[in-house]
Image (cartoon, rainbow, N blue to C red; front, side, top):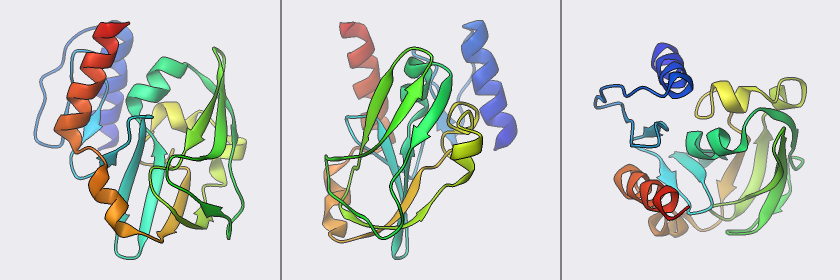
Length: 161
Protein backbone atom coordinates (compact mmCIF):
# COMPACT_ATOMS: atom_id res chain seq x y z
CA UNK A 1 0.00 0.00 0.00
CA UNK A 2 2.87 2.39 0.73
CA UNK A 3 4.14 1.90 -2.82
CA UNK A 4 0.69 2.76 -4.21
CA UNK A 5 0.54 5.90 -2.09
CA UNK A 6 4.03 6.89 -3.28
CA UNK A 7 3.03 6.24 -6.91
CA UNK A 8 -0.12 8.31 -6.47
CA UNK A 9 1.79 11.18 -4.88
CA UNK A 10 4.42 11.06 -7.62
CA UNK A 11 1.77 11.01 -10.33
CA UNK A 12 0.05 13.93 -8.64
CA UNK A 13 3.27 15.94 -8.46
CA UNK A 14 4.05 15.23 -12.11
CA UNK A 15 0.40 15.72 -13.15
CA UNK A 16 0.26 12.42 -15.00
CA UNK A 17 -2.50 9.87 -15.03
CA UNK A 18 -2.11 6.44 -13.46
CA UNK A 19 -4.18 3.34 -14.12
CA UNK A 20 -6.49 2.49 -11.28
CA UNK A 21 -6.98 -0.91 -9.69
CA UNK A 22 -9.43 -2.39 -7.23
CA UNK A 23 -7.66 -0.97 -4.15
CA UNK A 24 -8.10 2.64 -5.15
CA UNK A 25 -9.17 4.92 -7.95
CA UNK A 26 -7.55 8.01 -9.32
CA UNK A 27 -10.17 10.48 -10.48
CA UNK A 28 -9.37 13.45 -12.69
CA UNK A 29 -8.04 15.34 -9.68
CA UNK A 30 -5.53 12.50 -9.13
CA UNK A 31 -6.51 12.08 -5.48
CA UNK A 32 -6.57 8.63 -3.95
CA UNK A 33 -9.98 7.44 -2.77
CA UNK A 34 -9.99 4.11 -0.92
CA UNK A 35 -12.79 1.57 -1.14
CA UNK A 36 -14.23 0.48 2.20
CA UNK A 37 -14.09 3.90 3.82
CA UNK A 38 -16.90 6.42 4.27
CA UNK A 39 -16.47 10.06 3.27
CA UNK A 40 -17.98 13.35 4.46
CA UNK A 41 -18.63 16.29 2.13
CA UNK A 42 -16.19 18.28 4.30
CA UNK A 43 -13.44 15.84 3.13
CA UNK A 44 -12.93 13.68 6.19
CA UNK A 45 -12.87 9.89 6.00
CA UNK A 46 -14.01 7.20 8.44
CA UNK A 47 -12.86 3.60 8.75
CA UNK A 48 -15.22 1.69 11.06
CA UNK A 49 -13.81 -1.51 12.57
CA UNK A 50 -15.65 -3.23 15.41
CA UNK A 51 -16.40 -0.70 18.13
CA UNK A 52 -13.89 1.91 16.92
CA UNK A 53 -13.91 4.38 14.02
CA UNK A 54 -10.70 5.95 12.74
CA UNK A 55 -10.98 9.47 11.26
CA UNK A 56 -8.67 11.58 9.12
CA UNK A 57 -8.74 13.98 6.20
CA UNK A 58 -8.81 12.72 2.64
CA UNK A 59 -6.04 12.76 0.07
CA UNK A 60 -8.14 15.29 -1.84
CA UNK A 61 -8.22 17.61 1.20
CA UNK A 62 -4.51 17.36 1.95
CA UNK A 63 -3.71 17.98 -1.72
CA UNK A 64 -5.73 21.21 -1.71
CA UNK A 65 -4.22 22.31 1.61
CA UNK A 66 -0.62 21.84 0.55
CA UNK A 67 2.20 21.10 2.97
CA UNK A 68 0.75 20.54 6.46
CA UNK A 69 2.90 22.20 9.13
CA UNK A 70 0.76 21.95 12.29
CA UNK A 71 -2.15 19.85 13.56
CA UNK A 72 -4.40 20.62 16.54
CA UNK A 73 -6.27 17.59 17.88
CA UNK A 74 -8.51 16.94 20.91
CA UNK A 75 -7.60 14.95 24.01
CA UNK A 76 -8.78 11.39 24.59
CA UNK A 77 -12.13 11.28 26.38
CA UNK A 78 -13.53 14.32 24.57
CA UNK A 79 -16.94 13.97 22.90
CA UNK A 80 -17.16 14.88 19.20
CA UNK A 81 -20.37 15.59 17.29
CA UNK A 82 -21.20 14.93 13.68
CA UNK A 83 -20.50 18.00 11.56
CA UNK A 84 -18.79 19.88 14.39
CA UNK A 85 -15.11 20.80 14.54
CA UNK A 86 -12.72 18.70 16.61
CA UNK A 87 -9.40 20.20 15.53
CA UNK A 88 -7.51 22.14 12.89
CA UNK A 89 -4.87 21.64 10.25
CA UNK A 90 -2.46 24.44 9.40
CA UNK A 91 -0.69 24.33 6.06
CA UNK A 92 1.55 26.68 4.14
CA UNK A 93 -1.64 27.88 2.37
CA UNK A 94 -4.28 28.09 5.09
CA UNK A 95 -5.66 26.89 8.40
CA UNK A 96 -8.72 24.64 8.15
CA UNK A 97 -11.07 23.22 10.74
CA UNK A 98 -11.51 19.46 10.84
CA UNK A 99 -15.11 18.30 11.34
CA UNK A 100 -16.15 14.97 12.73
CA UNK A 101 -18.11 12.91 10.20
CA UNK A 102 -19.81 11.01 13.05
CA UNK A 103 -20.48 11.48 16.77
CA UNK A 104 -18.68 9.69 19.55
CA UNK A 105 -15.99 9.77 22.22
CA UNK A 106 -12.31 10.13 21.35
CA UNK A 107 -10.48 6.99 22.51
CA UNK A 108 -7.11 7.62 20.83
CA UNK A 109 -5.24 10.52 19.23
CA UNK A 110 -2.44 10.14 16.69
CA UNK A 111 0.37 11.71 18.73
CA UNK A 112 2.84 11.22 15.85
CA UNK A 113 1.20 14.17 14.10
CA UNK A 114 2.43 16.67 16.70
CA UNK A 115 6.04 15.93 15.75
CA UNK A 116 5.44 15.02 12.11
CA UNK A 117 2.32 16.74 10.71
CA UNK A 118 3.54 15.96 7.17
CA UNK A 119 2.27 12.40 7.66
CA UNK A 120 -1.10 13.81 6.64
CA UNK A 121 0.40 14.67 3.24
CA UNK A 122 2.46 11.54 2.73
CA UNK A 123 0.02 8.99 4.17
CA UNK A 124 -3.46 10.47 4.78
CA UNK A 125 -5.19 7.08 5.10
CA UNK A 126 -2.56 5.16 7.04
CA UNK A 127 0.01 6.97 9.21
CA UNK A 128 -1.77 10.33 8.92
CA UNK A 129 -5.01 9.31 10.67
CA UNK A 130 -6.08 11.82 13.32
CA UNK A 131 -8.39 10.34 15.93
CA UNK A 132 -10.12 7.11 16.84
CA UNK A 133 -13.55 7.32 18.39
CA UNK A 134 -16.15 5.05 19.91
CA UNK A 135 -19.22 5.95 17.82
CA UNK A 136 -22.28 6.95 19.83
CA UNK A 137 -24.62 6.58 16.84
CA UNK A 138 -23.23 4.08 14.28
CA UNK A 139 -26.25 4.76 12.03
CA UNK A 140 -24.58 8.10 11.15
CA UNK A 141 -22.13 6.10 9.02
CA UNK A 142 -24.96 5.41 6.57
CA UNK A 143 -25.32 9.13 5.86
CA UNK A 144 -21.74 9.32 4.52
CA UNK A 145 -20.55 8.71 0.96
CA UNK A 146 -18.97 5.53 -0.36
CA UNK A 147 -15.80 5.80 -2.49
CA UNK A 148 -17.57 6.13 -5.87
CA UNK A 149 -19.92 8.80 -4.53
CA UNK A 150 -17.04 10.70 -2.99
CA UNK A 151 -14.98 10.52 -6.18
CA UNK A 152 -17.90 11.98 -8.15
CA UNK A 153 -18.41 14.63 -5.45
CA UNK A 154 -14.75 15.73 -5.72
CA UNK A 155 -14.84 15.83 -9.51
CA UNK A 156 -17.98 17.99 -9.45
CA UNK A 157 -16.56 20.24 -6.73
CA UNK A 158 -13.30 20.74 -8.64
CA UNK A 159 -15.16 21.41 -11.90
CA UNK A 160 -17.18 24.14 -10.17
CA UNK A 161 -14.01 25.98 -9.08
